[in-house]
Image 1 (tube, each protein chain N blue to C red):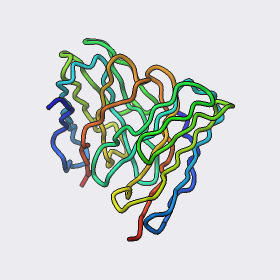
Image 2 (image 1 turned 180 degrees about the vertical axis):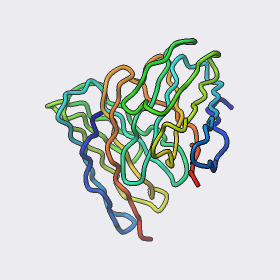
Image 3 (image 1 turned 180 degrees about the horizontal axis):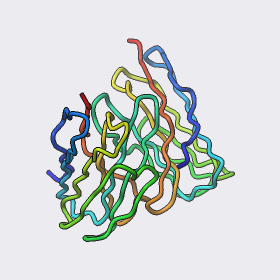
Length: 113
Length: 109
């Protein structure tokens, strides 16, 4: 079955450490996205990528970094520069752009301890 | 970044009742999307709308693209327990979409 796989489901990080969240898709989608979700808020765009080796900042890119070396993979690194990293992170993909809707992964819940 | 105003914030309804929720924006959008999210999971696309005034159904769900292009509405008819979850609207174009704050729906059997 095609889909998006995010791992791990739960992640704990000590303050000051970088951590990388994995996102892999086998849908042959061109575009991939990272969103952050906080309680009672809508999803906010961190980064997106329309093609391999190219990505664009979203509304809240500060403290995050991404790479897109393969079409199937779009890992997100939460750096120590991110002041409030505890959140639910969602990866998504779409065929070309998001007009036809995103396919979301099941999310990674990151907690800073 | 922009966030859309979605209302109501939460709803508690009896099984079998109809549900209405809406989403408004200060900006005009070319596309409106409606998603449902179960706890601890990613959102799942319910309905996509592409034209002002468009009315689209998906089973018991019906959504409308507002004529002003600044709002959208979602109705659920004859609610059932599995309708429980958080419903999000999203408006935008291309790769720039903005999400509403969500409507949490509880269905009481």
